Image (cartoon, rainbow, N blue to C red; front, top):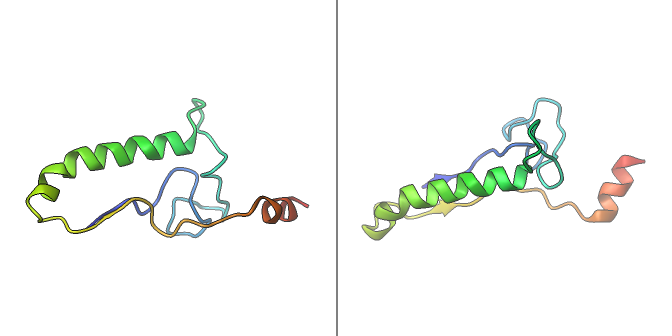
Length: 83
């Protein structure tokens, strides 16, 4: 199994997902260079997929997890957290 377990900005705000303060900014944040966290994640997924392609063809790799434990945030839930 290949799994993108943590992404820049944290996909769920939990300590095992690239956060130190419990904040999940993956869907809306960006790094110091202005690159969105989603774009950085897609670059990593593209890299992993291209490197894993040979294994997938030979059935040594059974599962490719695109993103581990993403949190779903409804826009209204986000607004409530800000207030």
